[in-house]
Image (cartoon, rainbow, N blue to C red; front, side):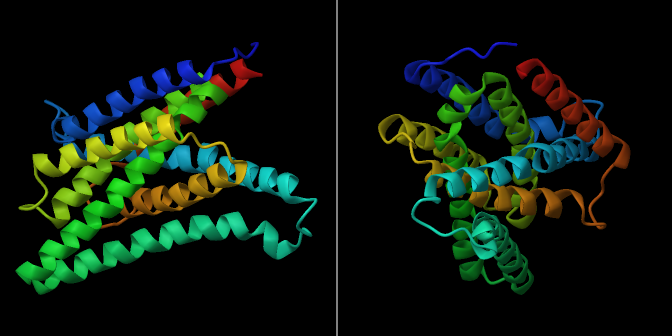
Length: 257
């Protein structure tokens, strides 16, 4: 299928539409988790399977492609070395470690039960997710211009992923994480889009680094929400979500050739 060139303005408008949908999903997350007739473990596991498929079939190859793009861009000024080839994956690892550290801090603080500590830990944890959301929509316009179908798939994966994030924040901070927190997270998505409209990401290196940082954070959040044995989950629904995304990605990839 022949690729259609998308203008900068069209890319921004498409990204805004996706951003509004994602913001709506943030606000609707508790209702999605509690769909009538469908247990929460089913919706959570379906979202987790879909997000895992996205990470391994789409995000990790995208990070690898970004590493190659950086190498080609800097080949005249930097001598390629095996260590240099690991740089972008080190960025992804940083994203993973930062969110893992926040998760450990949240559990430690909740265990101690100090009100003051819980308050600042909640603010810190929420701030990290706010930055996470800004990164998601900051590069959205570029994703739309690169390929509308892939951008929509990315949005589907992130939208359902927000259901998992909402469950995590609600579990850690049942009294603090309320509608106000969800509105803040939705607002961060709009902020990311606004920043892309004002200061559009044009550097290949910057986009690749941001994608890698986001990728590490997504990988950690997906693993911690779906893999822990103590969390009630459904392997069947997990496989359904994983298989659904894999089929959709295969179809889109085939049609884009």
